[in-house]
Image 1 (cartoon, rainbow, N blue to C red):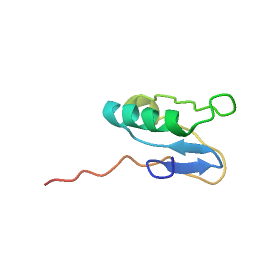
Image 2 (cartoon, rainbow, N blue to C red):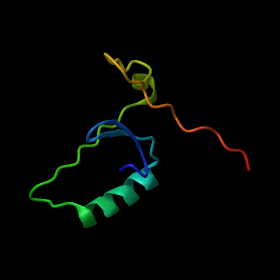
Image 3 (spheres, rainbow, N blue to C red):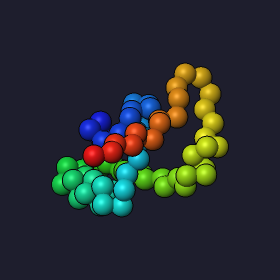
Image 4 (cartoon, rainbow, N blue to C red):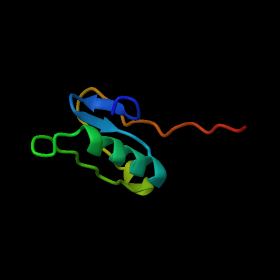
Length: 70
């Protein structure tokens, strides 16, 4: 998870993923997870909802990836 997202708590990550990236991630996760012991929760948040995220204490909302023009 550290390779694709920003750690916001011990085992909580935020990431901006396309559908293709999410599918690839899920395939990787299935290979390494202990299905009887581990869990992965994915919460999809719409663009409008991202502007309404609130937090208390230290931290910040993970910024979307920048635009790259090639």
